[in-house]
Amino acid sequence: MNRAELIEALAEKSGLSKQKAKKVLESYMEIVTEKMSQNEEIALIGFGTLIPRPQSSRMARNPKTGTPVRIKARTTVKFKPGKFLLEAINGKK
Image (cartoon, rainbow, N blue to C red; front, top):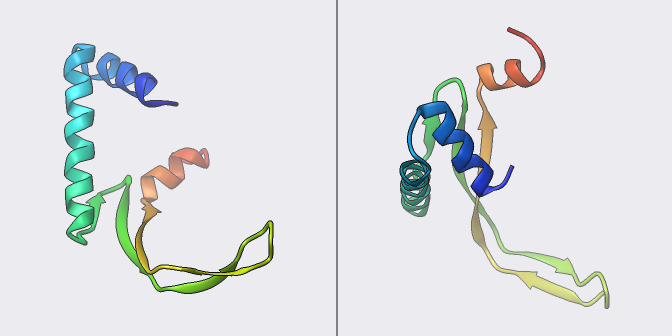
């Protein structure tokens, strides 16, 4: 599912117009981005949790040349699925 399909599905499920659904999705993405940049977790009970996770600097290899390359320290995001999401995707109710 791409962004346009998500907006369409959100509009259909919520009864909003596509323009309002697009605004809701954009607002959600802005809030998530802002909170993640502030190193805050976002927990949606039953669905899952977005967790900012620091990664330390490390050495890797360029796959084409085999040359060692240092990868800078950065923060990534881990998604931990919630109980109800896991049950839904595994066919349990």
